[in-house]
Image 1 (tube, rainbow, N blue to C red):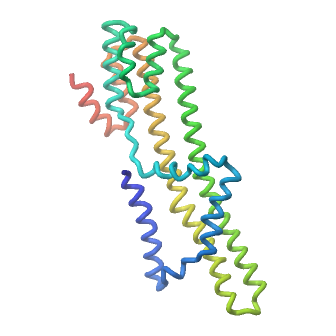
Image 2: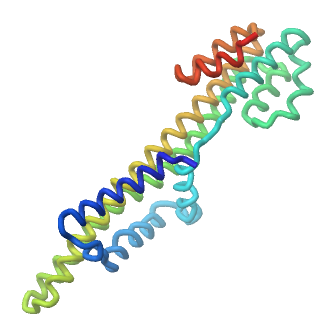
Image 3: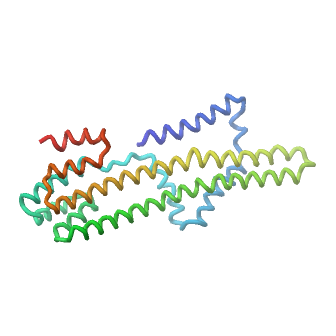
Length: 260
């Protein structure tokens, strides 16, 4: 569970609510069903115009990813690649074939399969980078979906403001309608701003960070696979792969994988 996401969302909403109370207001003053329908529900249905139904319905599972801490197992990957490198140097590349069936990482398995089959290094790089590009593209579409909701929500908020102002101006002779219409006009803008700036823009940023982390691990695997094919010394391979980690993680992993 990613506590940072929970703390961020709860904290941001808590500060908004605290601001309401400290200004002498009441939370119920800012609860308005028409504004909710226009901004939240309306902007969600607008997504169906821009994206296929399957993607729009799946946006909630995408959003759920921000509450998970991805574990790509960098240490395990480095350890496995170093072990494969050592075995390949001692017994030859064909000796790796018996190890592939027990390998959980499909991306690494495909790369090593190409190595065992004697595929040219440049072709291996092209094939693996092509697959990585497709992974990034799929991630980008999902991130774009969240960004679209972040864009549409304030837009629907402004639409609600216009709706409220029009209704108010047409009923100026009825003082009892001015308050409710003005509430719709202002609260829809508030809802749109909250959805964009507290919910969807930060969520998009978290998803981009997760995508970048996964891409870095995949790039590390590509370099490891190509180094094994080139016959690099396992220790040299380990140092090369450690360069993909940040300084803090590098020290922790380095002490473990290079302890011998």
